[in-house]
Figure (cartoon, rainbow, N blue to C red):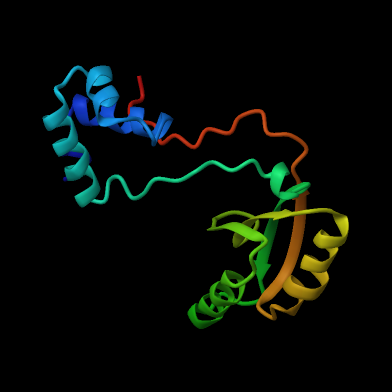
Length: 158
């Protein structure tokens, strides 16, 4: 089931489930204008096709003590495949790194980090990232605010 096989009802289901992953099948079926049995069947097909890959809770970061979020632009010392793979393995175990993107442009990777405070941030830089020998250069961009935080994958581009 690829993008070409998704009809408007599938797209409505995806939109509704992204907005509320705990919606009941009955409510979902009412919202999309389909009876419950075919709605449930469609959701299961979307899950089996790995179009729906999971259901997650959104957590209040401040309640967990996260006080600083930042992006770190990293350039590696070399571009050899084994060097890049070693880097990816090393950073996978650093829990403060919550997202990592391999990118084009002025850096090789963009990391999103979340820490409690400045001492925790300093510890991340000096005791964890500085020990990753593949890193050649780092630049940090501290997040001041987040005017938009939509985790919804667009289902249409109208």
